[in-house]
Image 1 (cartoon, one colour):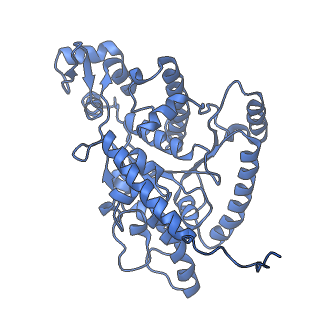
Image 2: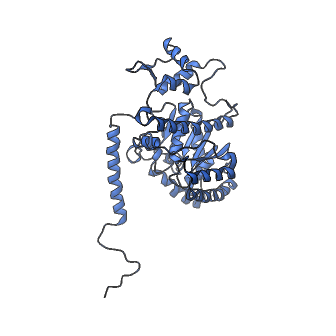
Image 3: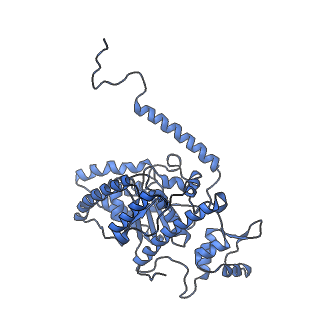
Length: 405
């Protein structure tokens, strides 16, 4: 006769689950560090590739022959010459060319002007795998490539955006060096300007993330129950307050929100002037998004009643990981467009091996050289990214009251 086992009994003798997953975490972290050092040796810094004359002309918005003539006359920054004899420009030189060409009323600098407010774009979704981090990172890089001063904020404790910029969260981001350091409730709070890091992408700075961001989710209920608050106000005011302290240095802030609706996400949504919601066109993802929208609405209504600012310049849905030849996906896209109209961006981010291949080396499509992969695949991915981000850039300029080109 078999012994009777109590319903709440657990197997004995093996390691506890928390110990097992801690060991797995340490082993995985060590191997990720080994892979990172293989790609980028400890003494090396991640660098952005240079740009051809044609790419430089396209980024600035002038003809290729004009850029060639400038180089021949040695007007503006002097590009390096590749072994083939072709000229290559660094992104710093592209920005310097913009400065050089800006004269009188003719400006090639898209910086915000007097009276134009800081644009804070929150990229969000309730469900992981929707392309949220890919979207946020490529958007930040596109805006920097086109001359804007950009701050990317990794608000996701998983810190995938930080990893794309070359930071392994558990090794490269110390305590109090995430946004949590600038929004925490105790005396260790520090200015955001001390946390911001320069990146290898000229014109693009980063506030990195790591697991420390979870502390804000734990601290906030305790502070709310105590009924006290400091000069930075309640939780939903703190991200906005931190960003305002560095507002003069940037035109656009892009926030990669966590894939859950917690205090961090709500605080980011209250700091935002615009919201971009990523949507993977699968029925389960759309159903999940429905729950996200309903929960967000209910919780933010309470925030608004308590003084939270929820007036946005624009809000858009972005279809991500789209497969043009997938019939059911196209039906869902048509369903969303019929339902939400112009709030669904016309361009869609295609699902592409070029994006995933670039990601293997912690790069984006904007960083990976064209010759590193199938050129047709690369061109399709780049065209898709440029179309999406170009429409978002137009929304930013429209919010500033600028005439659309």
